[in-house]
Length: 355
Ligand code: SAH
Image (spheres, rainbow, N blue to C red):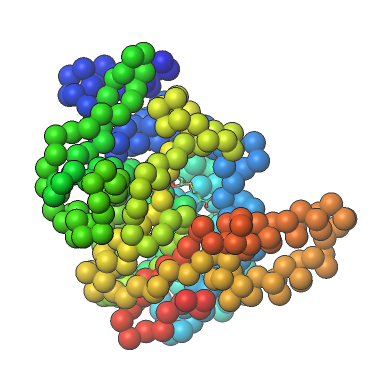
């Protein structure tokens, strides 16, 4: 058992078993032993590579999509340019570079980052090399202003709860102490208000997931967009409606058990795009249908951008890597289909480009 599993066990000796969401939150954000607070998590030497780390084209194209949306909305000013969970800051750095020439855009938009990890905030500061940036602790702290927002692989890190169908109720999968480690047990069955609609499309023994913090995060975003204008682009792996156990632990690019070494692996779960759309609509905004990442990037012109960049590659190895990165972002067997994007925008306004 590592230090964090011992702490979790000591706590459970008092509280009893905890939800997977509580467990995930401890593993990811424990102030000294949490995954995002301790590890060098991104890139080839870390545990996973995200789209902005694969190629500069990802952040550039997202930047141009948001810039076009901003221009389409009469160059709203002052307005907010926000990113949720910016990681190393690569996406925003590429976005800002690609939009430098859009007249008035950088002056009108103030950059806001929602980031829980102090270590990653430092990396983001460096990546943005002096561009004025405001870090917020809670989504509620976003300014009341037109909001142009991007979130890549943020929602998959939000803690989830899991439930197993049992007759007309559900048993929650809870984390408990087992022989020399941590494992799962089931709660007593009960009705769950938020899962009533799933009684029609699941059968006994099936697992569904709920992300308790997702609705409030989406509501804060969608309400600002409905009231003040703007749009949000959310990209993540997942699908329309949660089905089955999707909790995944990754360490050094390989899957490990979610209880093997708490805090040592990245824990994520598929994002339920239906839940994002439902919360956005309930808050008065519109949601696009989800679009596969590969399709979105093609619509935004990744092939033309890739060809232009290819001409400037210094040698054959760089060119090979560049072609592989393009493929990785767009090909259905790589990130192209598993990852989806959804746009939140104002009713009556056009969706951002690509949606
Ligand atoms: N968007 C980046 C990083 C993805 S990893 C990229 O594409 O490379 C997830 C990011 O979200 C990290 O920066 C992590 O610290 C942050 N994060 C996850 N959950 C969070 C929460 N509840 N509040 C604030 N930041 C969070």
